[in-house]
Image (cartoon, rainbow, N blue to C red; front, side, top):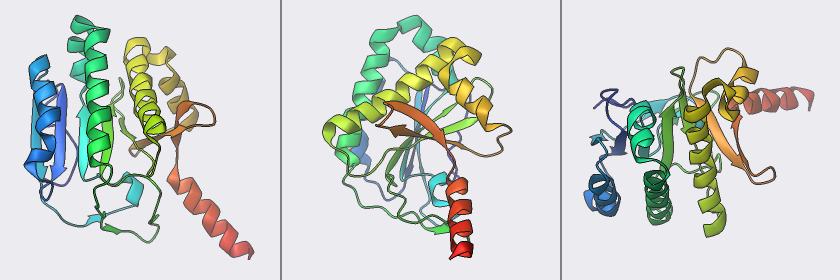
Length: 213
């Protein structure tokens, strides 16, 4: 598989992409939960190697991609009970891997290093209009705040697929204007809300600050 995070087909509910250096047994409990639920699921390892780009836009060691097909079909059939199974499985899985040591080899003149967000795990999904969203998780969170972060991310995604253009995520995307890259979403514990942010704006502010000093 190439070094990307695109699912192989549109009819898979869940796509798990992971660095080849991650031991297979890491996923045993997560896969067991997913398989027992009847989700159409595929996992593939990818070759370990350098990426070009800004660190936060690059794939984490483990990428959990929730396909549009999950919300278009499976979620509507199985409802909230199954959604909670997926959410709880991801919370338990992240607790297991959050302490893993992994470094993304990023090459970019504008790269953000030591971003403070996990390089080990992230959740990806597509919007109803086809944009790719990467839900990132801050490092060194308390167990409670980590659970709230994942819950907030998944709730934002669920609401988006249920309400479409009337959802909070759609409103946030509209404010961004034209988007040509992966949309990054982080949890803001001050507002108790998952919010879009642009690391490139931080780069621009840093450059401006350097020019003024």
